[in-house]
Length: 106
Image 1 (cartoon, one colour):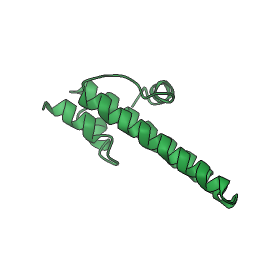
Image 2: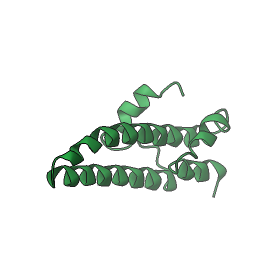
Image 3: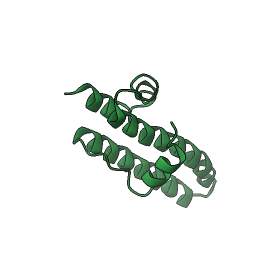
Image 4: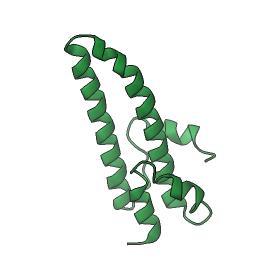
């Protein structure tokens, strides 16, 4: 497995996205692309799940909503890992284009 592909896959494991962003940036654009996607997804998950945590105060329904949000983030992480493992440079569904716009300079 080539080094860039390995780091692209590993970048979806927090905080390993730091390595491609700071060490491999000049040499491997593929790994950096997936590191940006992983970083954006991590930041988004932290923010959304923090806010969604307040929904747990709503009996029963709030808990189910939070679990659905967690499942959605898990699916996005799996998509990212699959794209990295199959040499696809595709943005994550729903949020990937916005992540690229916001983090394009990283």
